[in-house]
Length: 284
Image (cartoon, rainbow, N blue to C red):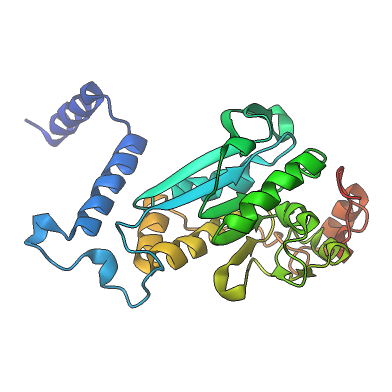
């Protein structure tokens, strides 16, 4: 049989098994993770892979971690989709999604995200994540803020991505705390008593409060959280599995790098953005 024939036969066999390349990455990654956590049984009982790193997480591999992601109409999909991709791959980690009334929420650009739980039905969580959005009118409503504050008070870790930190700040829980935010809104945090920091990842109170900058920073944020919770090697494993190897075609992701005329374009769309004082619906 020729090499070409062998490859074709191998491909057909894979197709018949019903597994795509992404399936292989997903299930193969989970299997590899399980083997590492269980102590490498296939390698003769070697030391668990994640225990070999010098940076251990707060939790033992067999200790459960419950994560709650808050959803709302007008939210940005990537703010929580990136972190979700990482969190779901961590061992013994349960990720839940909730909104004020439960069910479907309509995100930015009309994307419908469904089957969320009702915030009031969730008693507590270990970690709460509030993502940002192009319209914060929904999460800034008193009934939303009440539920977010209740769950934040009982959580070991309170986190946000992008301008989701403005929602947390509006509950009062970030008063006097350092927090990241999208660069266009970071200075609005001061209006709620929080301390805006223009970094991609910000930690306060020994990691009880963790936050990421704008949109794509959610992936960096989640990897940092993963390392803190499960150890550096678990985070590195997850980063490799999802091939997070950023190589942006342009250095235009932040005003400090973007060309002045591009910054001016954003300022025209979002007045005050370059000063970190842009306004969006829901921000009073």
